[in-house]
Image 1 (cartoon, one colour):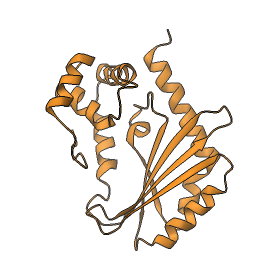
Image 2 (cartoon, one colour):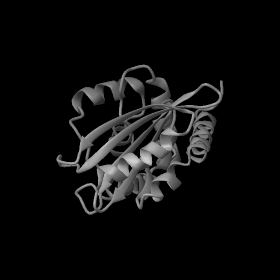
Image 3 (cartoon, one colour):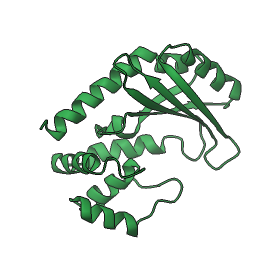
Length: 195
């Protein structure tokens, strides 16, 4: 069997290829947004979910700019579906975009773009989280996280930060302990944790 690290590296290479093919960064920059990669791709922990996460920032946060960028993105023939959620009046002060992209090889990738008001509560928060994970995570912890992600595929929605907290903060190193850890640490809304 291929090593966990090799699988992760291949997934990450594919994700960066899709970012290039879609032109998503340049598209958002064309409407004046600041674009930041966050999540498992940023931390090198992309494993079994074909998932790319961006936080983009604007001030003011205009729905028209958001739709302009996503309209440009939707011109790409690989874009199969877009979902829009208006969260401007929520604590997050954002617009959520969920995009499904089918690549030439048939693989389907989900791209989440959270368009956030610059200077609002979560401005830079998840970028700082990814930075700190990369700073403190040991090679052994990285391999454990990737292995747990691989071994729990198909077990329903598990967000990345659950793995990171369990392994980095609490020393979890096997699936059974991780399942028990999740029962004791249920996710509610936005998980605020920076190691």
